[in-house]
Length: 453
Image 1 (cartoon, rainbow, N blue to C red):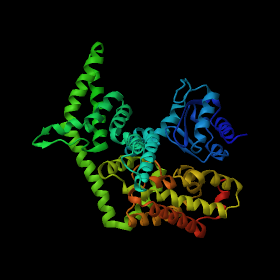
Image 2: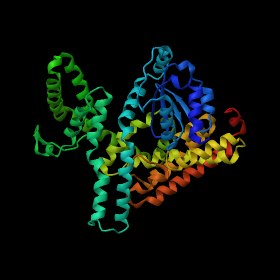
Image 3: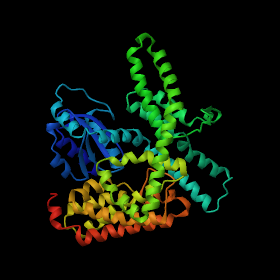
């Protein structure tokens, strides 16, 4: 049987059968499912399925199978269940008590906030990756001596730079959608923030600046757009809703955005970028070590999504983000730890898991290694963080930065700013080496593998 066939059969067998699956969706590495009866799920057996790198129990059941494989598995599950991606199948026998208890367990203000940030930015990652790599390739060509006036290079820059120019519109759309508003009105909020016509307006004695506040201002404006829209809809007669609700919403929120929300977003954006720059300037290598060494725990609980608007604001304001190259060392430390486990373990199942997850780990996709290897084993998770901290300190010392986001590991090399490609790569090697060394010396014992069986 093919790998994806084994995974699909295992998912069906240990989630109560195809008729128990209510919804199938996926992201870059995870199958996300909702089921009718949560009591029919056998998590222990599901984790043992060959090719399953980890299972996360949240509002949805998340089965980590890795990039590429996830698309094939999702397609097969849809064929077997008769569902289309994202479609919800109704049922009268949903185990609401079990589902409610899972939601309650994960229902904290911080988790909810970060979950919403993730829902806004995760759908944009493929576009950010594609555009970032195209931009990076064009920048590399320029640095190598290509004439910036050549047509082909200008075309590449137009293709690669488009999303970063108009990103506020997409973020506004997703924000309004996430908070229950009309996506198109959220897009208008994004347009209000980046509209070049703002520079023709003088307000309170100051000329307005297009893009002031960046994505922080867009998030505020689009959220407020959804907030006001829902409340206006409650009082507007249904017969006039299609006309009055969007008209009043856009008028009120438009004025509020230009007068209040954009300046507030500007203060937040300036404070965040200045704060992180100050930490890196003052803390130097120590700050780099702390940031890189604590990033894997953030990924583990899903808090890393909250950093996406910060990276993008750095790119918007300064052309590059110094934070990403430091945090990318977390994945590199984990790769080194996984290689050490591969060398030391006698467990064929663990070896196969590591071999399956390592290639994408080198490319900066760390979830398969995180949930399939280092976190379940325990101590290698800690030694991976230690290895990452050494690489993070080096990146901070070298002041490397990235022109784009969405990729990490070796994939980030084309996006490194100021021709510091080799220094970034050397930092990766350092993290690989120390992640391996710490894990090989005191991070792994064979009984850890026995506990996974």
